[in-house]
Length: 138
Image: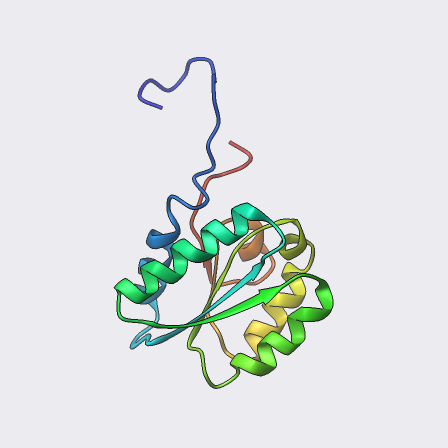
């Protein structure tokens, strides 16, 4: 990374490394943010790491955290029923399940008026407020 333009000898998407930055960005863009919902498919170990990093960052910033764990598509709608009126923003931990249901997640987030943060651009293309992370195409 220090010398762009050469050969790639390794790859990092920095998923968990920048979880705190995503939480900070949400706090900056959502006025008066006090309660953050975090949604993740806890079947994957990388998701659990990202989820824990986001929780820790939110607590460091003085935010109340509502963690919602999913394992299948049917778990998504009940999450939004549970956080409606309780959360002021949503942090979505990306994985294949979340990616598959990103349109559904964003539709429900918009219906409950939750600004949503993803780590991948595809979340924004499906209707989320913003994303912050590695560009997979690059």
